[in-house]
Image (cartoon, rainbow, N blue to C red; front, side, top):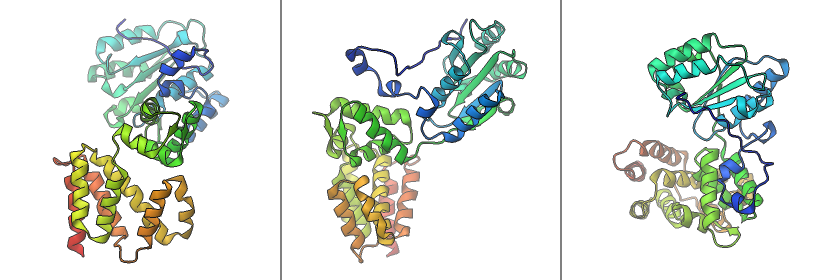
Length: 364
């Protein structure tokens, strides 16, 4: 057969040597292995557990969502809960097995009875990568599958999956985890790995994870493997990940808020010269800009600053928020929100940020 029909689980109870555990990727080591370990997808878990409890298991599911949101992990948990053993669980990478011959091989495979389980489960990852001919062949199998076969299709690009396929599946949309969920994940994993990480450092790692459990684990692993000792500070996260230095973000914020165009533009130029990712630079700026603006209108927000920022940054933001001459308004935030959204499509990555600074001066 052309398909690589393999079943691999990450079992938290598996006994490993210390050396093996140290070299295991964090996203594999801490991949959810049961429903109560799944984070940020309560709507999916509730629907699937309800269907299982009522005996209303569909023959085909479609999990759609951005990378690293837990689609494959939940598919594996689902298969295990309905009694599918490793030998009857088949995982297929559609990016590598995308042709009609591969799907024909799959169609032959589904006709054989399970080895030792009530169901045979086929998880097809990146299903949108299948060719048109392969989709047509898969459609015939989805229309009339054997009663013991369950398909779980996963995709990061639902718009590329033909409607004929979508209509044959129960579709679940996976949400990006919130910043709070990712921060708590970082704090928990760091603790379990024997490291002490302060809330501000965890917040920065979570932000760099960009809405992905897998990417957040990856950033954290890079930090933990490179930090000296067992304590992680924001300075170390910046140094190890290449995140923009605090002073650059603060300079841009002050320059934008006070009309000091030269200071703001210099901060952008320095970030460019240091090969800082402009999208990340804008995101860190917006995070601080939002905090300073909220402090002006929400007296209780200042008490939560310690959970998001270092003591030094919290003091800086309180001072900026209290400066009545600073042009820290919703228009300022909107200008940089627009800049953030345009960075990815700009031929010159720093240009949207520069324009935002200049536009604020022109409006004065």
